[in-house]
Image 1 (cartoon, rainbow, N blue to C red):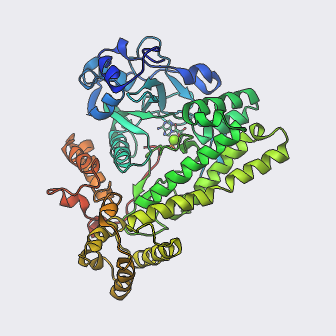
Image 2 (tube, rainbow, N blue to C red):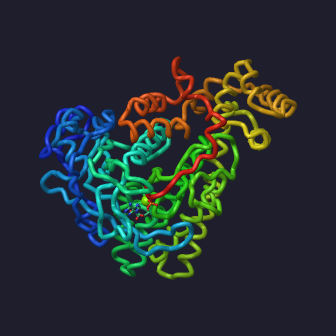
Image 3 (spheres, rainbow, N blue to C red):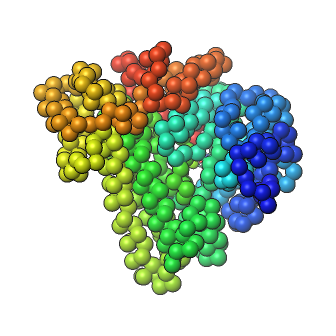
Length: 504
Ligand code: AMP
Ligand code: MG
């Protein structure tokens, strides 16, 4: 799969072999080869008039793909899957999953394809995957398609997450297919080219376990270990080490979501990766006013995936992963359950540690501040923010200025002036470090009203400029820049309640 097996891959050698035509794109197929039971060989629908809407040139370079070539008709055909290099074997992946708590034994890529694997400039294997590329044997009632707006939405939000330093799948390109997609109205169709360190999910393990084929389950676990957690292969109990590593990665991931106010919106087990990358930007959104009950998804009536429930849901999903892995954890089922329970017992502590460390940084607290003091300050502040419906992102950024002595902006955001004054003097007495705070408290996040404005211009008028301007702000989220003031502001009050949708 590597281009020069005897050569070290460095950014320079990748530069030298930058793929400039279809035949020079080296697409591996280790998933399809090693796990044929989880792969259905499949092809993308023909796009009648593919038109590249947005290309992530920095990511293309990282992947050893020539951006100028990707913009040619041949390159664009790769980005919609209608032309693939010789030897590539695109597949639809099989997986199961719990959706809103209900088990579905057969989900799989209903509108997506894994084109193959690329080795990036750092020598890491990355999946090149398409979303919206047509029906597959997993489509059930769906049309296999995606519309321009939602695919651009995934592009904007996943790149914003990456810029925030949060592990995530990446967006390489969005291409309009020239086809129409029928939703509530007729919409222009698009294909998203997505890059991930893999598309292995909790649901992949649930599917493998449900086949009853223990050898397949073991092969899948070995594949995941080799790809993501090679240290686990050298552990005394490699599959316990795998479970443990996924648990840590997910505890840290969800803590990072919570720290920036991100609501995933559809944390079904098929949407939780083994790598610890955020995946599937469907109904996700960033919270404005701080409230643990925040829900955006139109179908999440019970608030199962509300902001404040995300750590508990992650643990629930990981419990499903542990169940799927049981036969690999111990030969004796009772002992396997005990091993799984012990591993799962570590989740809450790991989440808590990541959240507390993150909150200390957001508050700029020096290392010598006692954790009990930090925890009390955090709890009291979040109560003030929730009770006063305070914009989470604006407040934390303003707190950086407050650490420098300008308390007025932060103060003006809170209704309970006596409460915030008392809190601020307790906090400032600890000598918070404003520079540290400014490196973790973003000025610019993918605010709902800005995302909607950019997508409406792109979908309705074919005007991509608002999206490009938004992406420019979001890709340097911690650097305040003149001219970008409106990207830092909360939604106008008439924006109203924001609703998001799945399967768009
Ligand atoms: P999601 O929760 O959006 O990741 O999707 C859950 C499942 O529904 C996956 O198996 C998807 O492939 C499938 N799916 C979503 N939208 C469509 C569609 N328009 N056509 C076919 N399958 C779809
Ligand atoms: Mg999904």
